[in-house]
Length: 250
Image (cartoon, rainbow, N blue to C red; front, side):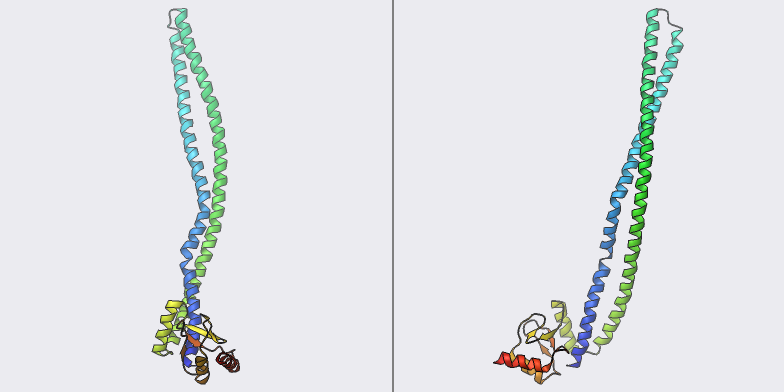
């Protein structure tokens, strides 16, 4: 095997690993965003309950003010009752007092209901915040794990790339340019010979080329279909390739 092909086989393995690492590193923001979506429902629940509490508190204050107003009316009406001159006027004042006291009773009943609702909302908020905190802890742990993995991936990428660069200088410039050009176009620039075909595009090699590969094992051959540099895997025997070439020729 040509020495450049030996180096390129190692480089191609490293290139594949670099692609995997780049994909994992690039996926970090998306994976973290996916984790964050798990918190959305919990946060919305907390915010909804807080909004309901604000509405409830506003209604409670309004009802309390109504009670104060009606009590003031009762006090004012009772104060005027001693000043009335006729029974009709007195009955009118008492009707006003009765109406105000009835409204006070309604308001007090509503206040009691609002207090009960408030207690229920306090409990619901506490549970929602507890669920949010638990989910947040899980998300934080998962995020920390992803970030640690990404840090390790970046460190590995630096090591792999350094090894790759050290190998690149061992390869002839023309061969390296062809490998990198085809790799960029087709994903891989190197392909094994699988029986009598290119191991990547699966197009059968011409019998003459198979004979030339056997006759000149230290030269570089290119797949006439996909342009990848061809190599004979170590586990493939020359005898097997010879049989395939003879079979194809016949």
